[in-house]
Structures are given as C-alpha cells and as structure tokens.
Image (tube, rainbow, N blue to C red; front, side):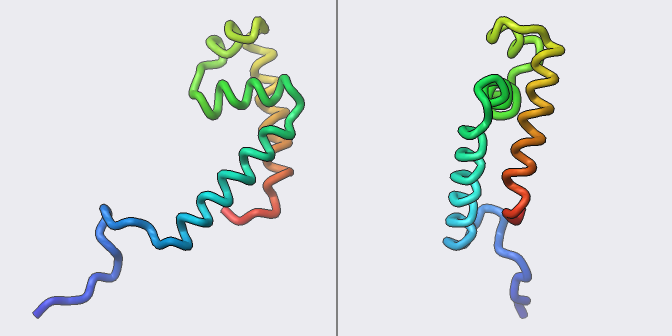
Length: 88
C-alpha cells in the first residue's frame, strides 16, 4: 500500500503561480534597486547582488570600505522601506 506524498519531490518544478510570484518579486526588487541614489545602488549591486566583499567593492568604486558600509546600510534601509508592502 502506497501513501500519498504530503510534499512534492525536491526536484519537482514549482507551481506556475509560485514562478510568477518569484518573477514579480524580482521585478519589484529590481525597480527598488534602480530607484536608489547612485552611490547606494552601486554598493548594493556590488555587495548584495554580485557578492563582492566590502574591500573589493571599495576598490572597484574608489572609496573606503567604511564608505561602502555606510552606503550599504543606507541602501538596504531604503530597500526595506520600499519593499515593506510586499510579502516575503
């Protein structure tokens, strides 16, 4: 006797509505990042989206790691405020 699975197998494709929700979330995040002031946008992109270290982002932008930290905090605060209305 076989019991029905409570959950789909791990390799199963997500339901279509989940894929649409993920795409919508990605579009909202992309728009929120684009709306950041240039220094914050550059730092958030390099550190959070591309995975650079603070030191590497600082070197790429010609600023100090401390300035990267400040811009990242301000940028992430702005993103949190912009995305507050959207469910996780």
